Image 1: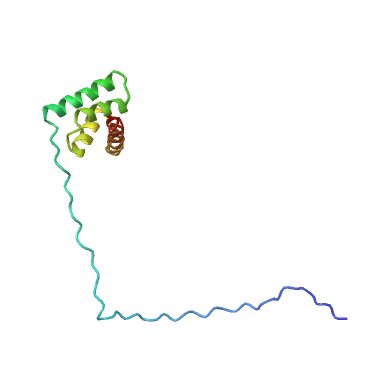
Image 2 (image 1 turned 180 degrees about the horizontal axis):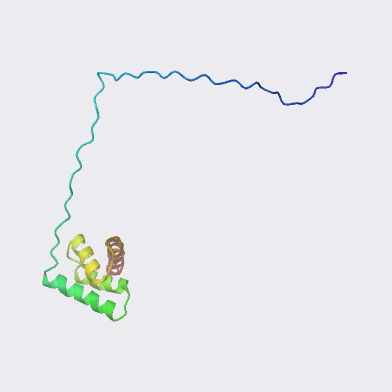
Length: 122
């Protein structure tokens, strides 16, 4: 009787032959891709010198000073400037409610949504 023996096969180590590098020639008919020059986007000029905007910012600062939340200050500013452009309201949030630029955008969306909810029931 022959029994099969489970022994791992031992492979002789062989030195790997270095690979030959192929020379790659550029194709003459392929167009050369270059990046387009970056467009310079100038920030919008927002005029916060209107009396209504100054008053809204002052209301927001007063609420913050009285210990109210930034959300309360932002809502007060939003109500006062509801007819203004989005960028103007966001700039007023930054000034009057001491918000960051990204935070001001978030508060603008939240205030707009809350104002729509309260305006629907007629």
